[in-house]
Image 1 (cartoon, rainbow, N blue to C red):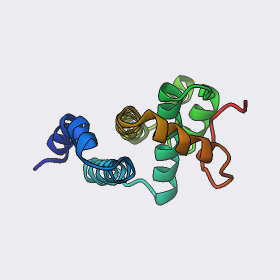
Image 2 (image 1 turned 45 degrees about the horizontal axis):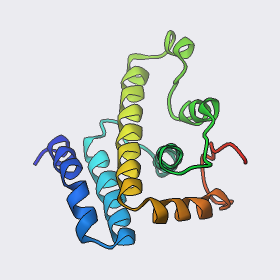
Image 3 (image 1 turned 180 degrees about the vertical axis):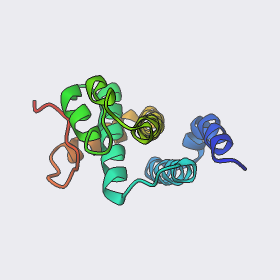
Length: 149
């Protein structure tokens, strides 16, 4: 099965899986599966650090959508993503063709992880937001883009 077909099948099955699995198991399963499938689609290989940043940024953006009291800083998001590839339009004018392709891949990976965060959050908003509150105060969170309260 192609990875893109796998992503489509996972996305359509997310709601039903949420109904049959305990939320922590479901949340871990979705994250693991999406990370594996994004890895299969990659043309360029993300380093572990780059993937950690992409996942953390997408998670924080998903939390902002689901949980009251969370806001993200879009300038910080762009700053972190720019550590992987040029993200600002003015930087892309001078970027290589490979950088433009990598930007597309970064946005695909980010969007896929963001969608997974939304699915997990919608499955059990109370548990998702409680976990987000813990993450908000975790000094180990990479790519922090949440605006302080």
